[in-house]
Image 1 (spheres, rainbow, N blue to C red):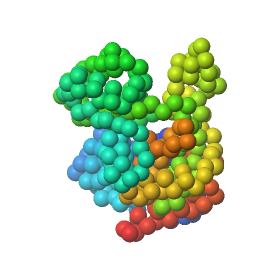
Image 2 (cartoon, rainbow, N blue to C red):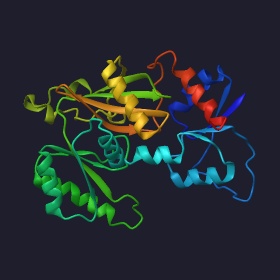
Image 3 (cartoon, one colour):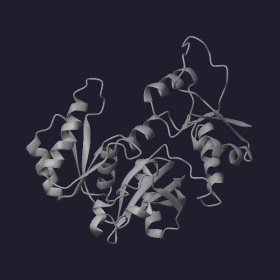
Image 4 (cartoon, rainbow, N blue to C red):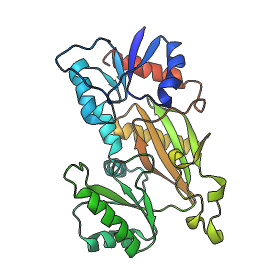
Length: 296
């Protein structure tokens, strides 16, 4: 039986075990944090492949140095997907639809930041270039609120240990429907629509921008993920995105607003949503794992 090292201890690990065991792949957790490692000793457990490179790239480097594992989504895939600005730039160059976006690399002049935002048009969304789960994402409606948020980014970026000193200014898409499509080996194997709580629909005074439940669709911010059967246009867009980024196992986030669909972000370490994918999902994933272990 092939032995797969999985670096996440979250829901994905538990959801993988039984379906992959039925396909002769033993799933085991591999700790990469919260430990002390003797770098001169050989690992006791042996694995045939690793499943998604650790979020902490330095910890992943230690695993690579000790084990030399082939990865489903290795360091390059995770680093590529994590860089939101890089993804937007690559997809735009390939002719795929993306939100209008500017990247700010600090230190940047306030007037230049304000001019970029005005060019996009308020309200706009400000987001860190490499954070996940909606952390640090804000919507601003004018120059004053824009520069107030950017001041906080400046303070964080002043710390010398802060590796990424950039953030995005991005157009806000009103009343957008938010989808996460899972692409495995060039095929969409299912997806979800992330919906805000009911209290976020109408908002204060009928203004959806002032919704009491918020405007973000992140599950970690209270949204609900429900299985979604999307049309071929969105499926093709997700597949093209994975192809451009050259990532075999990828969550592709799409926003659909006023008849327009764009790729907003991607995730090379996506959570597996139990029971929300096509019946062929596990077979395709097992195929990618076996091909990776074989070095293909």
